[in-house]
Image 1 (cartoon, protein in one colour):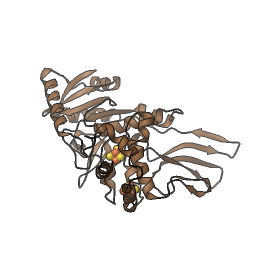
Image 2: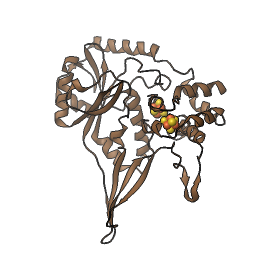
Image 3: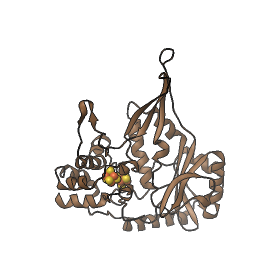
Image 4: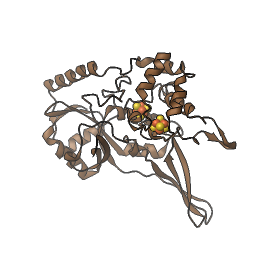
Length: 343
Ligand code: SF4
Ligand code: SF4
């Protein structure tokens, strides 16, 4: 493990060699400051300077739709579990999205373990890419302290001018470096340049909302009856964009597709959203969160309050996607600021 160096002029060779062995997904420009993770075969296709993609890389770990079971009842009850996966490497994952994958790992490793998620996770290599500057005003990675690497990747690239400093974090990362075999040894000057960048970033990536990182749970606990939730409820369109784009949202529904023979079919897992009206409806048509205001409060509780007691971790990475994607312009940082005034 440790550090190696990749000259920028060799990035193309790195991506091309990796992609000759397996699928490589990386951020690609879609125009108008939009980016998406897509398959690439050369470094030229990759946007190395990008704001968070429309969907986070969770789409590879937890696809928007996946078949879980196929069944056939024509002779008895035949059920076949389905696990869909493919070997791939996701290149250029920012620290906020690596933090999001770490949250999903915790959720799906709980008993009963989720075989589909965990199988895919074991087949997907992660190569991180450091943000040297803040992406935009919607991100709260300073508040969430996710702007520097904190594990959860195989390799991690930091742009230091003419070269990338590369942290090798796992055996898989070590294998990639050995197989591609175009890396140089990291020397003292490379380490100094990395330290200088990180020190500079500590000055720039400050909390965006003037709230202490450690006080977020108390902030939510103390504002459960706030008028802010009514305001958000009036604004919200209940479209579910905010949860779909969130790297830590994992709620899903199960859908049965029965074929016309009424004997065969499949059960599919699809993303769901706590912002949809029907999400909390149970038998007897009782809905525990009928009001949009209740659902908005629930969304914030699910980021800063509930997961802390269960996983000792916030489930917001500060990526800013929910704010960027909201058609009603509901802003995560602005709402936190408003709550802080009421505390
Ligand atoms: S994206 Fe905005 S409008 Fe849509 S559900 Fe989320 S908060 Fe409501
Ligand atoms: S709640 Fe918003 S800012 Fe936080 S991780 Fe989810 S999408 Fe990103």
